[in-house]
Length: 195
Image 1: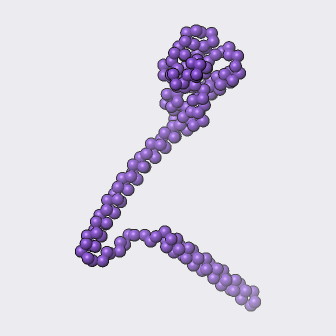
Image 2: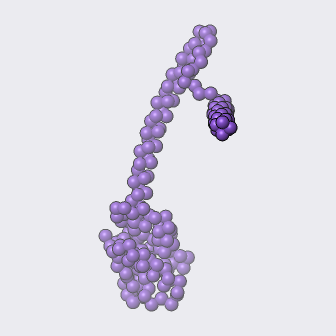
Image 3: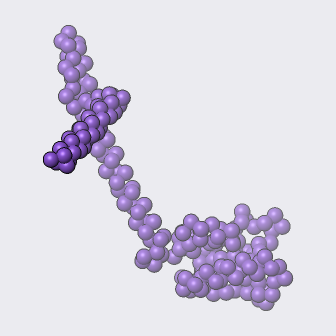
C-alpha cells in the first residue's frame, strides 16, 4: 500500500506550504513510504484528487486544498484530520497501515484488547454474584412467608459509615499504643541516666 500525499509545489500560500511540509516531514521522520503527487504541475493529479475527495470533506467552494492524503485509492483525510490523528497517536490507523511493533498506537490497541477482556470477565462475575443474590433473596422471602424471622446473612458487610468508624477506632488505638510505648522508653532512658 502506498500513501499518496497531494501537494502543490508552487503554492503562493504560506499556510498551505507549512501544512504540506508538516505532513511530508512527519512521514519521512517516521519512515512511512509515500508518494508526493504535485497538483500544480500535473493536471491529471489535480483532477484525480478533486474527484476522489468525498463530498462532505470538500470546502464550500467545492475545490479541496492540499495537502490531501490517500492510501492507494482510499481517502484518508486532509491536514486537519491528519493533525488530529497525530495528536491522538492513531496515525497508522488514520493512514490505513498496521502500526509497527513498539509504537504507542500498538500499545494502545493491545491495552484496549486487554481492557475489553477484563470487562467481559467482570461482567461474568457480576452475573454470578447477581444469581447468588437472587437465590439469597428468594430464600429470605420463603422464610418470611413461613412466618419465621429472617436470618442475618453472615457475608453481609456493615454499612460504609460503620466500617469507616471501626477503621478509624482501630487506627486511633494503634496511635495510642505507639505513644504509650514511646513514653515508657523515655522513662527507662531517664532512669538509666539518673543511676
